[in-house]
Each structure stands twice: as C-alpha cells, then as structure tokens.
Amino acid sequence: MRLSQATAAVLSVAAFAAAALSPTSALAQDTVDIGTIADEDIVVVQRLLYPKDGRTELGAHLGVMPFDAFLLTPNIQLSFDKHLSETVAFSVLAGGGYGIKNGTYNQLSDPGYGVEPNAYRYLGSLLAGVQWAPIYAKMNVNAERIIHHDVYGVARAGVTFESSTIPQGGFFPSPTVSVGIGGRLWTSENFALRIELRDDLMVQQRKLEENAWYFKQNAGITVGITRFSAVKRRTR
Image (cartoon, rainbow, N blue to C red; front, top):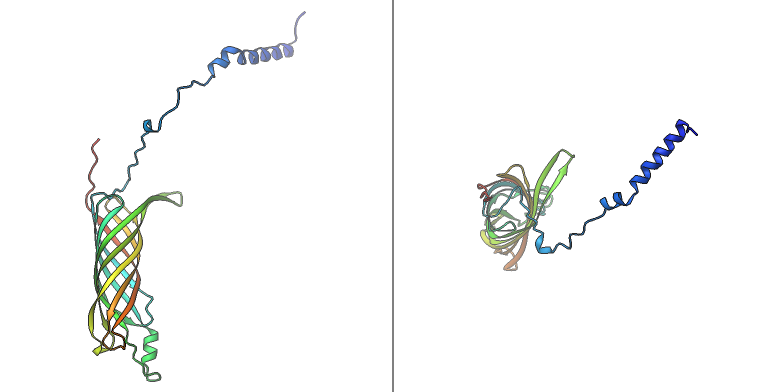
C-alpha cells in the first residue's frame, strides 16, 4: 500500500521528534556538577575610573552665605586636600569675603526706624580637618553620558575673622568648628566640579553687647573647580 505525500510528511516529523527525545539526546543536555565554589576562590577587583588615593587636590570656589538676617555674603574659598586613601583626606580651606547689607538692614537704618543693627560681617577664615568620602558612584545622564561622582562629609576647625557693621564695633577672630557635606562631579581624569554646603559654628566676644560671649553660625554654599595631581599608575 502506497502512502500519500501528506501521510509521509507526518511520519517524518514524528520520527524526528522521537529521535530528539531519545536517551542519547537527553544525556547530552545533562548538567555537569563541578562542586561548590568557595568564597575565597572568587576575587572581585573594583578599579575606579578616577581614583583619589595618594593624590593632592587644589581648588578655587565661589560661595555665598545667604541666611544671615542682615547681610548677604559673597566669598571666595581656596581648598587643598591630600587624599590618604579613596575615602579619607586631610582638608584645608582658606577664604575671604565681605558682608553686604541687605534690604532688611537698609530698612531698619532708614530715618523712619533709625536703628543701626550691630551685624557681624564675614571677612575671612582658615580651617583644617578631615574629609570622609564613603560613596563613589556613577549616573547615566539622558542615556548618553556616564558621570562619575562622589559624596563626602567634612569636619574642620580653625578661625574666622569678622567685623561689626558699626565702626566702633570692632574686629576680632572667632574660634570656629565647621561641618559640611559635598560632592564631586568628574569632568576628566584631573578635573572635577565640586559643590559643598557647610555650616561654620563660631564663638564670638562682642564688646558692644551686654553679654561678653556669643554663639554664631555662618551657613553657606560653594561651587568650584578642583584639579588633581597625576594618577599613580598601577603595575600590571
């Protein structure tokens, strides 16, 4: 009896399926057990694209202290950081600026009020301390560019120089403790954009006021460019 072409095609497909499911094919797909890999056998090396360890960082920053009730204080800050590791650095910050009388101050000193506030304007500071940067990361911007950045906290101590807006109010240094948070956005291997928000906490002695000692805060934000020294190349 002769088979039709359709019947022959069906039988051919059935024969191919049977061969694919045969024990020989199954053995070829079996998983090979190579045992358990111990943790010490797995080594993960993370190489940062922009390392900091062993490098120095010099920067120039423009800042403003906008939170004083009577003065707006633009300032310039110069920074030096010696990175002892990828997370810890010795940090020095020197700055200068000038407190400009704001609208509130000018209104109170108008003839209608006749009050001259005894405000204390920032003139300069010198601070040193420790910077800790536990976070290094990267972010995708518009699916076109990867920006490497870090986040750090910093604690410094030093001295701040201020003077009274009243001529006879005096000029004096103030012991200062400064805390802040900031971050870097690398633009290349040697340059980064740096942003820092900090609060300088001062103890002042004011001769024109009833109490001899006062506590004052200077909170501000700075934005600047920093330059790193050459990278120490790793040996292969």
